[in-house]
Picture 1 (cartoon, rainbow, N blue to C red):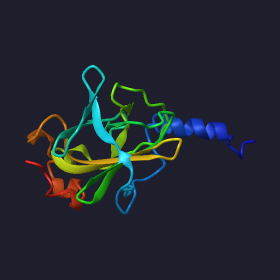
Picture 2 (cartoon, rainbow, N blue to C red):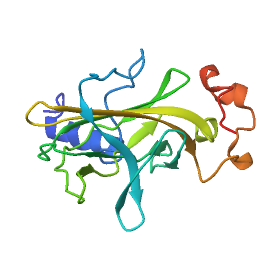
Picture 3 (cartoon, rainbow, N blue to C red):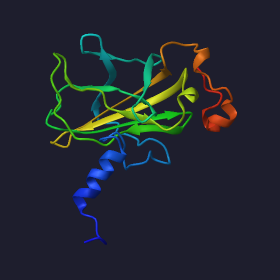
Length: 192
C-alpha cells in the first residue's frame, strides 16, 4: 500500500497543484495555431460586456488581459455562434503574436451554451498566455477560435486584436528590460 498511490489521490493532488482546473496538460502547439476549415460556419469572438452582454471585437480592437490566480496573464474571450447545437460543444482558442503561439485555451469542463437573443454564447473561455504580462502590453495578436457541436458542425473565427491592460500606450506596462524578459519573436510588435 505504501508503494502505490491511489488514482483518486493523484487526481486531487493534480487539481490542487493546478489551482482547481486553472491549468492545462496540453502545451500550446509548437508550429502555430491550428488552421480552421474555410468551410466552417462563422464564429464571433468577443468579451463579456457590462450587464453580461456579448460584445464582439473587430480587427484592431483591444482585448484586455488580466492576471489569473496562478500569476499568469490570460484573456477571457467569449464565443458566439448562430445555429449551433448548444449541448456541450468542443472549444479551442489559440493566440499568436508575430507567428509565435503565446497562448491557448485551458482544458476544462464542457458546458452548454446559453442563448443571448442572437446566438449561443460560450462565456469567459480562460486562455492563458505563456509570457510575462509586460511583454504583452499593447501588442498586436491574432486570436483563432473554433467550436464543434455534437452534430459534428464546426464554427470558426479569427480576429486581429491589441492585447491591453487598460489602454495604449501603456508606459507602466512595459518591461524594464524587454530584451531579457521577453521572447525575441515578441519584440518589435507594439501597437501605437
